[in-house]
Image 1 (spheres, rainbow, N blue to C red):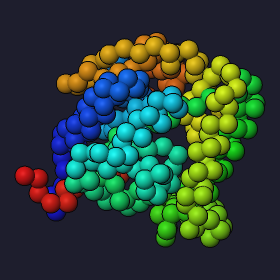
Image 2 (cartoon, rainbow, N blue to C red):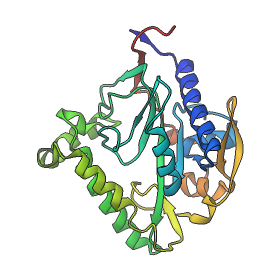
Image 3 (cartoon, rainbow, N blue to C red):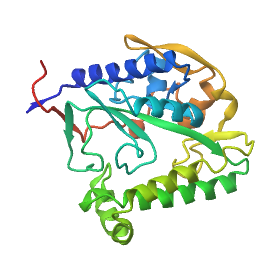
Length: 276
């Protein structure tokens, strides 16, 4: 069992996103790198120095098109974590390298996966912010139930031990009630997240997002896309990235505060067998 170095990790992630980028360009699917990946591309032309993952976001129609393509005919070393393909416990998707795996004392939720990129759907939010917060709260409640379908104590996975211990107790009733009902809950969450998609609202986001102020993005910023350098690749981003980064990170053009520096150091990655 050979541990994967940080540089190998990034190389594999870049290979995955390069495949996704070429597929999207071939089929006229627009996507944007997102979150820390977008911040890194804008500020550093690559990974932010403390980051170690890649995120992309797509409007729901583009998300569905991409996931349909990724659900079949993948390269042999890639697999898709998507509720229509295999059980999932969060309302997004991952494309991962199945030659790899991870170990973590905290996060065992998706421990069947390998090195991945995250793929997030962007759905509509209501114009009224109070209604939007009620909607996001309803989504979070149903996602809690979905996560609780995970076998064993993996449903209590978290980034911090104290949170994991709390979830193991607080989420136990939901776990006992919903275990074995993964597909039913996944379909319910997927439908709920799209509740406002045909109602002509002005705002959108990945609607399984934290309470208050993260975030209500203007839909207009998802109308135009452009190329951007990321490490050795040319990827895609929303043309007008400033409202997105302003809403998500506020003073993102300044050096980060220590509390804002986060990574996935609680993961340790390994090859299933030595690479050839």
